[in-house]
Image (tube, rainbow, N blue to C red):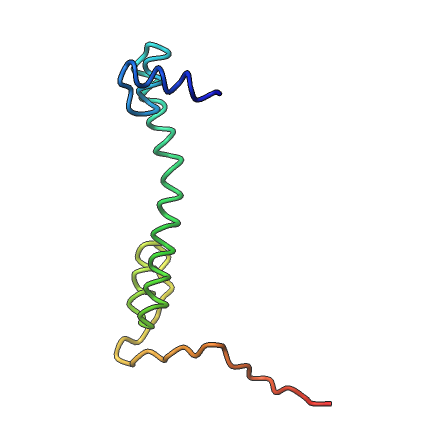
Length: 104
């Protein structure tokens, strides 16, 4: 119900983005610019989370420390002290517990 008038306006005046719609509605380029900047600021943290998740996925899949170095570089907090000469240890699944279970 709410989107039908907006769709009609966007088709009639060939508006392609939210910034175009606001610039047309308020008859101001500044409104479009402001919407563009707010949208950009809203998307940047989500993009950072995607890059972080991708680097962690690469690290898990390849079992290498190169993924950790990439993660360190992208986040900017390089507390990574790895030895690249040593081959990475394989990860066992399911994880083995070090504590032994006591049977009753």
